[in-house]
Amino acid sequence: MACPVIATERLLLREWRDPDVEAFIVMNADPVVMRFFPETYSRERTRRFVARIRECWAERGYG
Image (cartoon, rainbow, N blue to C red; front, side, top):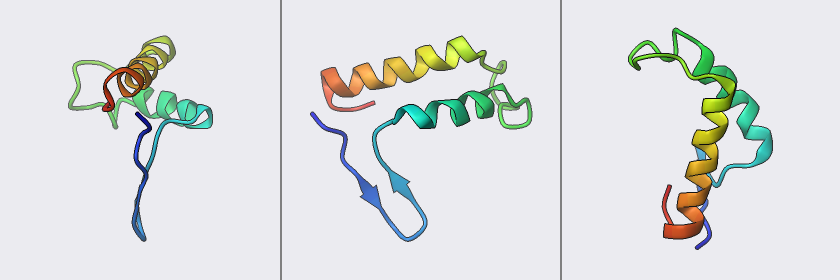
């Protein structure tokens, strides 16, 4: 099932694209952003997380 696209004037929700991953890696490595999580995420952990989200969409239709 394809991921739906939801767009408003200020927000765009869509499936992950390869160029999105680098910004997500940077965000997950930032201690300020991740202050309410047990720890920051490494580059590899973030890549695995994105892969899991993509797999869930492909298999179940949600991420």
